[in-house]
Length: 117
Image (cartoon, rainbow, N blue to C red; front, side, top):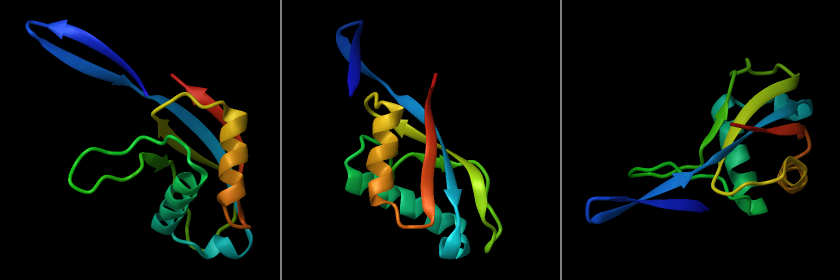
């Protein structure tokens, strides 16, 4: 995690700079019957298991910061779905794809990733 401390008066304030990865994934086979919320949980578990440095939300019940752009209807397959992962540390897109695909079940596959500013 990259931090930069700025002096303001007598106190030091830490600023955390997060990077984001936009991924493209496909959902097919029996996993086309998975709901949107279960798909988010699936990505959260796969991210934790793969050891990726995904940012946690602040608050009472912290979760991984993952945003899936569109919710598909139940039973619909797709080859081009988008999700955004907020990362604590910079991760190369190729390394992200390799790490998360090893932990995802058959039917969900990350096909591409690119950094966002």
